[in-house]
Length: 484
Image 1 (cartoon, rainbow, N blue to C red):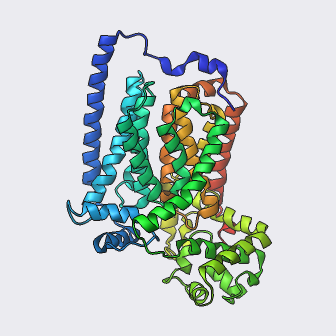
Image 2: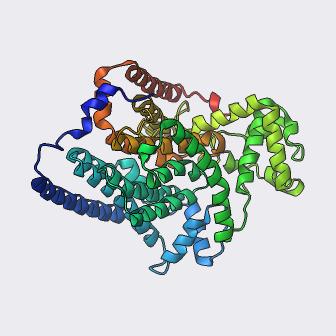
Image 3: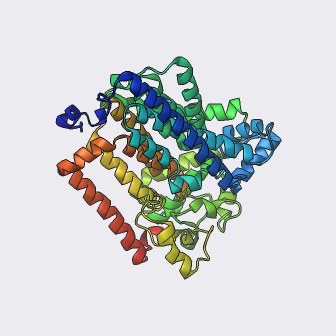
């Protein structure tokens, strides 16, 4: 669906760009750029001080241990641990990695802000810089996590190219190379980040005006498919990471889910599961917790390892999907629903082994902590509505930037329909950043569309209202049907 011609003709982004003489504009632009740079540095300092020395999680603790030892596994992509091992030459501990993440976070938002400001959209530029301190982002970016590394590197790489393209300038080769390095780091730092990678790569190396909507979708699909084995080869050979059977965890959870929804226990013949085993071992929230070595159902992978090779498990997984496609779809949709924080009861992590003892007060507080701005479902619906309203045309520099962010963010989250195994807002951190950033870039045109109140706008309002209404209803009624 393309942007309406009359809205394009009105050029909502041209405001203030023709009313100022060149010398005055250049002087004012220089002052604004300096102000944006100083403010970004100040926000970086505040951000760094508030999270000092860096928030560690069990995942990041494991990766730091690998950074110290120099021996990597591919359970977590090794590029983060390798980078951390280099940063240890500056200082031990999480502080250098915290600085590494925050430098690129604020570089990206500063470049986006200054790029908008230089096109005459001063207010949008300041709003973009403030977006870098959006409470959800300010909370997450202090954690030493691969999710944060993905976002920081990706927004910095995108921001470097955006600064030139939004002004109608061709990025110089050095900038393109720097952006590609950052985008590649973001793609390698999470196993599924390849689904966010392709639009950013295309935006950096090809003039967006040369890529139509159909070609964009085809190229994104092809590049994402190619990136999967390439990233695996890089992780295993360049960093010499020891295989850790991460993909087998996804396959095992899927097969257990298929058995639970189909009632066919024979899909895991070598494990000898009973119906009661399935009832206590399966949850769409965080099945991996129960199936790891510390989970209540660790006997399942133990039996599997003792009797089944990785190739046999892959075959078992494929046969189970082909034999029970409806059960597979039920399982994957329940996992995705949980990840979206959509039709779930309040504090639905109580259905996981990670936080089972939850007080009534914590459940009530969840309405505040997990409000609609935190639901990934809210952002995904907004992103889909923006695609419907703006289309995937590259008729202008702002539109090409928006479509890059929207395709990257939506592609990343929708990939969890197939590869998600656990629920946490951080898994959709990049999608939320990309969609909110696109919203600010496209704001003038979105306002124009809202004023027309056409069918697309009305449908989007209805979808958002239904999403929030259904989510609140599930929480208030404590509906648990999709949690088992």
